[in-house]
Image 1 (cartoon, rainbow, N blue to C red):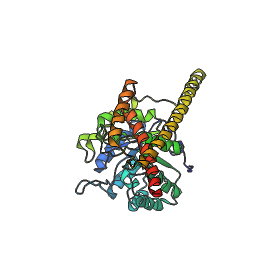
Image 2 (image 1 turned 180 degrees about the vertical axis):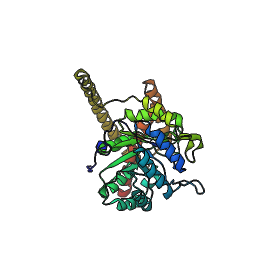
Image 3 (image 1 turned 120 degrees about the vertical axis):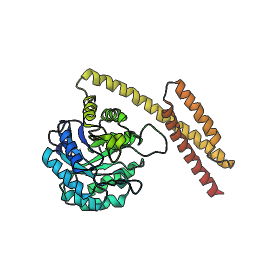
Image 4 (image 1 turned 90 degrees about the horizontal axis):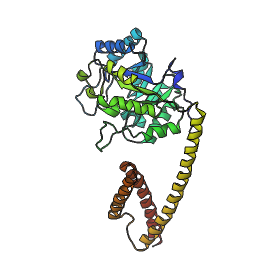
Length: 365
């Protein structure tokens, strides 16, 4: 897949990694916006000032943003600090107003990304402009939906496109507000290597104490930027108080980051890496051969079940098998979650194959 995407370095002059976008979750008052922007300007790492003007909330009768008035404050903040500005747009009308007030970068939020109609309406408004657009991942872990939103924006002729990883909602309780599921943004980056990937650690974390470690993880997987919610008095914030940090805390987080490169100029290191990767390639081939052999046996089991009118899915057997594999994996020093995810996938494919064989048998009957 190939989209015509302009590198992040051509959006932002004199860019250094990571690109830092900072500012409050919501624009609350003119004084709050101006004070925060002026304070963030003192931090050379911050290049873009963010603030939510419209806040899509789960329930009514909660603070839903100050609306158009806040765009005037953003314009003034840009004038006084020189920082670029960005805000979320959820509708075509939002996009029109943001363009009217000279917002430099738009972002599409998780709820909007999940609605192709809304994304397309925004894309239609942006045709003929060259405004950069960042697309947050959808609320649910749906890579195709995320990719589709990006393609819709690209279809409007926008070439300055980036993605924001903000984690995914989950019924499963974790330490995070939104489960990061890092493999999804990594896969998106593999599919679109030129796509700038920015991490929103605030929405992944949900609490400020986790923001720093998530920032480091984002750097470890080679993301290009960070969008960190920053408030002069986080505990008094009108929205998402628990996950916002102060400007001083932001400085500490950024200064503590360990930045790594994808390649090394040390030839001995690269040779060692090539040798180790060759070993992994051989093991991966053995894994593929073993999986192929396993599925052939699964087919035989499926045929036997079909002939004897036995259901493909046998929960008691699967439960016992998973328990055994987890025990074997732990004895081998493997992470239980890793083993469970691996064998869940293997079992799902086994049941699919056996179900297809059962359907074929039913047609014959």
